[in-house]
Length: 234
Image (cartoon, rainbow, N blue to C red; front, side, top):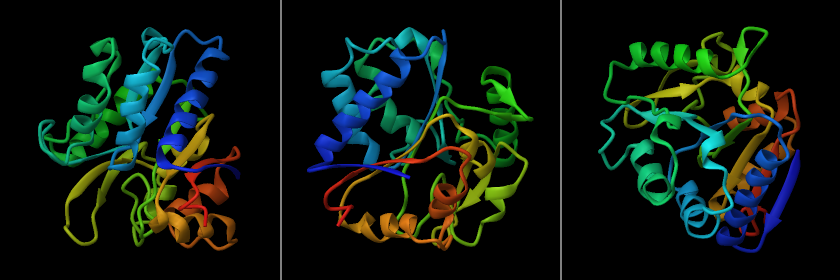
């Protein structure tokens, strides 16, 4: 595990954007496949990307996918796609043909199958699973990641690329990238800010797989990188 700690959420987000751009620019690939995380934490990063790094970004080379999506319409306030569109895509010259959203308005099981097939057609396959260049993850206070919640650890080992996860409190269904393709990504990055993330970051350092996020850190094929602010790293 590689920890990158910065004073504030803004500093952390800025460093992460720079890191992603370095990965893209150092690659000789014509297409760079990134799976984006949802939730509230990446919004600041997307704002900074649009405001400060748009001109430095080779938008034509990047294909954007999602790690997970709530089963809602794309204009719903809970939509991860809507959040990314408002904070990033509407403000930069990205080609809409390079943005592949999970259709949360569709039947969840059918959409998981459709999106799995789409990713399999476009992302390089190694040993039967797609290998993203970057998978950007967050971690909930309960230790979940990619809508893989505690008690749904079968999604960490399933052979399906995307599957349906269920929020344990609200019962809301979500289409989620499963553990096996996450752990095979070339670059697995957690973005974590705020004091509420400190126990989760501590769980990464512990040996026990105390939740899905910790499991990813402990079992990934490559070393996981953490971008965190000082509050999360306390």
